[in-house]
Amino acid sequence: MRIYHRKNFKLGLWSLLLSAGLLAAGLWRGNFDWKDGALSALLALLGGGNLIRSLSREKSREDKLEELDERNRLVKLKAQSQAYHISQFVFLCGASALCALGKWNGSMLWVGAGLGLLAAFLFALSADFFTWMYYDEHT
Image 1 (spheres, rainbow, N blue to C red):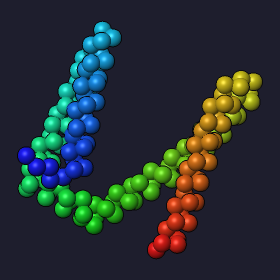
Image 2 (image 1 turned 120 degrees about the vertical axis):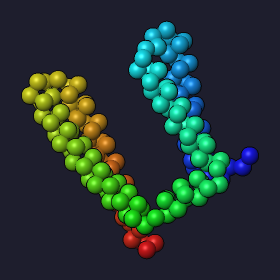
Image 3 (image 1 turned 60 degrees about the vertical axis):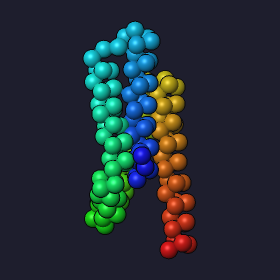
Image 4 (image 1 turned 90 degrees about the vertical axis):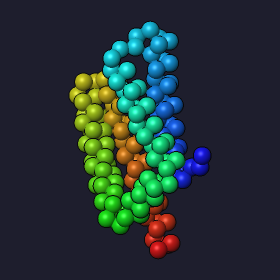
């Protein structure tokens, strides 16, 4: 048995471990309901499918070719870039709204939540700046 696609193998193994962990935690707590069972089954099916595809030479070759396809890479790059800009906007708007609500209510809890979102926004901006500097020098 040979692993032809390590990334799919790791993803499949991780999905199976999450499924087993969810199943074990639900049974141990005693509140395992149908939603936990459905999620556990879905994770097990996806993990098993990824494991099988990673052990098949032909399926692994198809997966690797799809990953290297330029159009898929461009779509992924554009989607990640747009998601990043949307998250920055949501962080800033959410932080402003929560800080304003805390000031209006007089509750420091809302202000603290707003400052947490502002810290996430600051982290995103600094990551953007440092990656821009890195790729500006190395491209």
